[in-house]
Image (tube, rainbow, N blue to C red; front, side, top):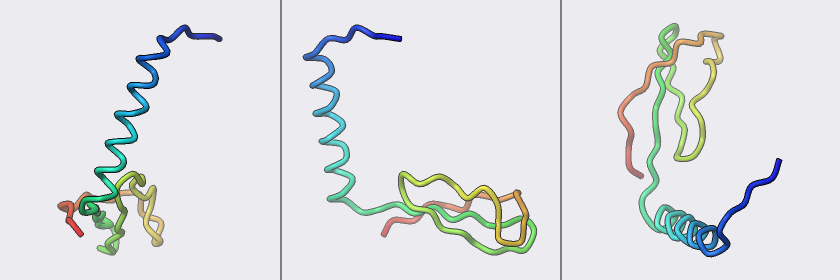
Length: 70
């Protein structure tokens, strides 16, 4: 499968992405806590990482807790 794209539009999008990533690196990092509905253990993930699929106890019901700036 092939796509036709405008070269200037593509380069502009890459530049915007680079600027956005640079801003994220220079600013504070957001972490998200996930509390296990089964055992109450909290798992922490950081920006751009997915939530855990299950707790170490095997429970898949993880509830989000408020994000925190670091």
